[in-house]
Image 1 (cartoon, rainbow, N blue to C red):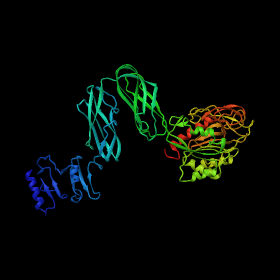
Image 2 (cartoon, rainbow, N blue to C red):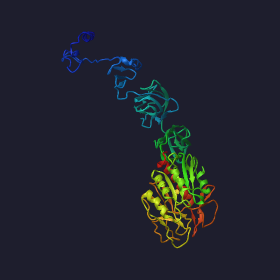
Image 3 (spheres, helix red, strand yellow):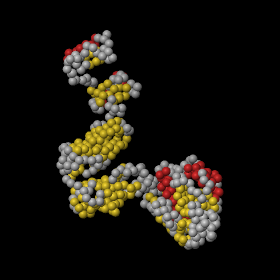
Image 4 (cartoon, rainbow, N blue to C red):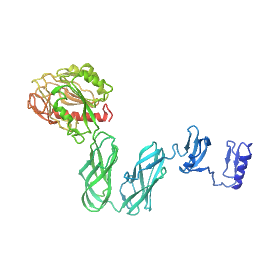
Length: 583
């Protein structure tokens, strides 16, 4: 080998006339400047040796001044365990271990380092067995390998591999592999390819799995859940379990809409005990959702379902209209501002529901809606008695709805023309008309369709299915629609057996459309706090709480206030999920 090196040095220092240089060969490949052969002659044995380039740590590599580099200059980076070469165009060292090279990062060794799953002697680990390194501060994107190795080998370990494509906070799961040999507490040291830090954690291997039964009726989901807000220690699920055979347990949920829950340990005695599943993650939805709770019990009820109730973000509403026939009435205003109705612990869970503006003037409403410096309300509440829509207001409300705004609209007495302006702009229909006279006078009660699964008919403020809604109008004063747009639901037919038996039951007096976030009431009715008049004020609230009232030409208990509040609850949900403002 010494002779080879001497020949190489002699050739490189003195021989400039050769077009190629060969080592271990007298006939270097004509397409190369340097040809290192693996053998001297064709008949010679292969020499199992290679070529070593300069080996530098990353610090030593970075100490090379840019003026001392040359395009394609190559070294071996011992910090990265990879060949690097200098790229003149980009003015940096490039790694040949993939396009990005190895990542650089630090990880949190505190409370965010969690061991998940149940570990049983002589039982192979599954995907539920992993160590979660929940916070990883990536300073350089690239590939990574993080390994948890036992201080004393017990037949299993953990590894996480992948690529960080961006800097910042990340989450890594180190999945377990192997079969625990002994029941004991194992100490693990966590190391990585991209950090000089190490962490330690412990894993408990149990001897057997308990036999226990989940009491599904006892499940409680605790804490507040808000889209985009990470869970804290208050976000837990509690469930009672009845243990018949002692041993280890693991109760968990899958990741649903960004969050999950888990609990693990050992039952040391039989009986009934509460278990707390700790939540992790960040909700990604503004809708309530189900999450399955499953356990590893060898006997008993193993699965339950819990409902995660999501608290909606702060939202706003605007009111158009005046007096007791509008949403600005004292009774409706009190109901809307009540945190008991709309609040973090309210009937509708929402951080806050506040009034953005209120006006009795259609012109002012147009100005507010067209003012680009003003925020758009999530919901507009417009009972138009005394504030009939102008062409300009109808046009702006159409724009508002078609851009995702939510509108609850009540018609002006006998003014089907204005209603058609609204319907035509939003849906391209002109199907509104004044109510048909029928066989009795004003203040009719109309049956609400028996749809117990409908979220307005059977909403958070009460079930109105099969009940009645009352108009507050003359015999032909309400405005009905003869045809509904696609994806609409009839809440109340324009027909009733007492006074409107000849009206086509397909005609509608109350309905809503899911596609355009639009609720339609065929009359803007008055509200009251205490009136018992059976021929007036069909919508009644007691200290902000919607109530039923005995009402009508042929009296029935009407559910106007409850239906109104259910409509607002529906409007809030629609605005949060696909409204005019991002939430």
